Image 1: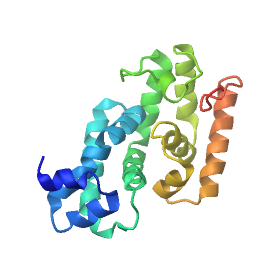
Image 2 (image 1 turned 135 degrees about the vertical axis):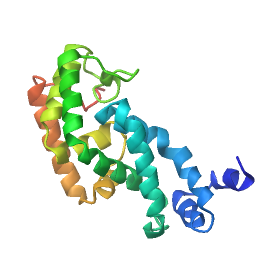
Image 3 (image 1 turned 90 degrees about the vertical axis):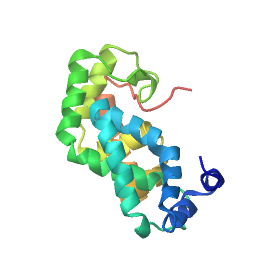
Image 4 (image 1 turned 180 degrees about the horizontal axis):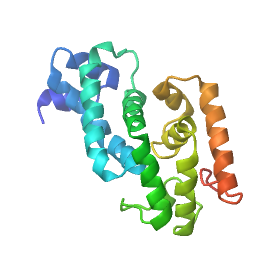
Length: 195
């Protein structure tokens, strides 16, 4: 790691992007900060085979579009998740096949079971399959909001920024998605943590 790269680890994302315009290698700081998170999010949606490609493509697109980024926005995470979510949308059929396969088999290809990320209170096994089926049936907009909040751990505001929709739209889509999941899972809400 270069001295300049080390210095940038303390700088906010907007400044990193701005400085990368003069020194493109500085953009690697964003990759170091967010690639693992983006990869995990995409893996959950499409499986690990497509996640490598989509994560790489997300950062390539971000790099190419960095001149249009508003450096006043100190957090690039919503921007990156927005790019990744649009790329996932291109693979919507793959996502639905992935979720339906999970519904049939109950085998989550990631080492961490789905029950421990989205469904903290739902038991593994049959519940994971029911959840996967319910996720596959959600309209894309509702699924995007739900998974950005639950799997990517974005705030409602970050999710709105990511998808380019008003905050109220995020809230209503999330409400509808949770309602549909509760209905599909016999009343349990897998997106809420019990206190």
